Length: 143
Ligand code: CMP
Image 1 (spheres, rainbow, N blue to C red):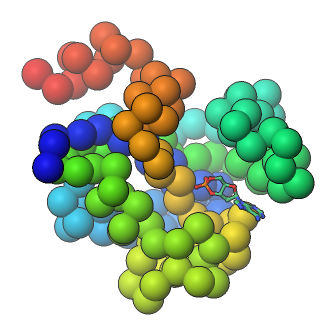
Image 2 (image 1 turned 60 degrees about the vertical axis):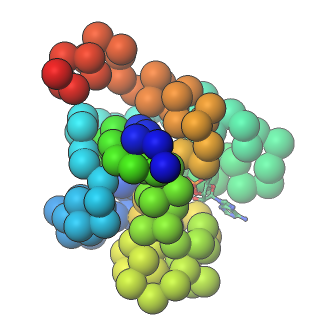
C-alpha cells in the first residue's frame, strides 16, 4: 500500500462537544499522523465551495449551514493507505449506522451531524488538501 495524504475535518458538532482531542488520538492510534492542523470557522461561502459536488442534493443547504455554524479543525493526515484507513476509522456516513467504536459512532449524532469528514479518493484528497493548505506550507512541514 502507498504512503498517502488525506484531508480530515472535525465538524462543528464534535468541536462543540469538546471531543477534538479524543478524535485526534484515535486517528493517531489508528496509524495516521497529523501533518498539519488548523482550527478555523468556515464562512457559508467556503462551506458551499468545499461541498460544491453536493450542490444538487436536497441536504446541501442544511449541510453548508451546519458546517459554517461553528469552528472546525481541518487536518492533513499522512500514513499507509491513509484515505481508506481514515474512512475505516470514521465509519459509515450515518452516525446511527456506523460500526461501534468508529469515530462517527462514538461522536456523531445522525447522517448530517456526523462528527468528521474524510476525503473519498486520491483525486478528492488532493483537491481538498489544496482547498485548505498551500503546497509551500506542507513542504515546510514534511521536511
Ligand atoms: P461528509 O463525509 O462530510 O460528506 C458529505 C456530507 O453530507 C456527509 O458527510 C454528511 O454530513 C452529509 N450528508 C450526506 N448524506 C446526507 C443525507 N442524506 N442527509 C443529510 N446530510 C447528508
